[in-house]
Amino acid sequence: MKRYINQGFIKLSRWFLLAIGVSFLLLNVAGVDVQAAIGVGAPRSVTRYGTSTSAILSAVAVPENQAYFWTSGTVPPVIDPNADTGTRDRYGDTKTQATGILTRFQTLLAEGGLSLEDVVYLRVYLVADPVLGSVDYQGWFDAYAQFFNKDNVPKVARSTLAVAGLVDPGWLVEIEAVAVYPKKGRG
Image 1 (spheres, rainbow, N blue to C red):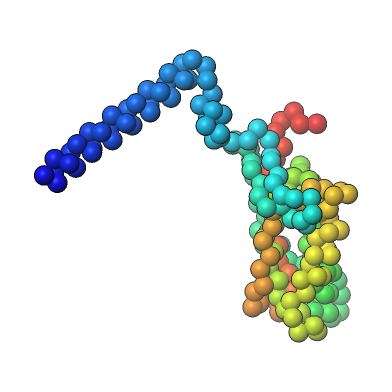
Image 2 (image 1 turned 30 degrees about the vertical axis):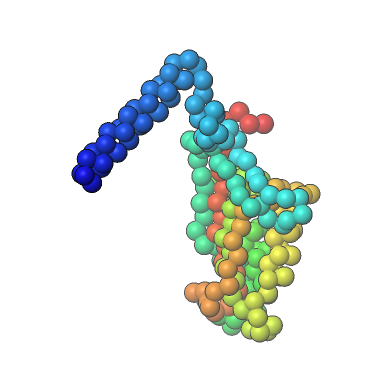
């Protein structure tokens, strides 16, 4: 009995899938955009989701066939070459390091024909500042606000992680960025 029920279910499933396929085919022939009709599909331009009160976006949707620009983890520049290697003094505090990295991104993006306005996502790794004895989230937030705020460029989706350490013990910040090339013809 169970075998007959399973065979009947399989036949019914095949008919159901065939009916759905024929329906989509007829809709397409009739000129109906099926993806738009069911609310699926890539956006026509980068869409940023979030509230005006949040410092970051909750999500970003990127159109299909749009090229991405990914950076590797980028670390802070040396601000005091005379300071001992592997020390906070060589690179500065969290805010100084993050500001240096975001400034580097401006140059790197410009070399790729982009700007901070094209950045859609940041992944940020923070290490505890030995002077403070904890992760300086506020230092990172302050550096971020200098570059990504309502007065200059759009906010981005972002993840901020506290990690045990980075390759150089003097580094307190490492950041990865993802940007999207604008569609051709954008002004």
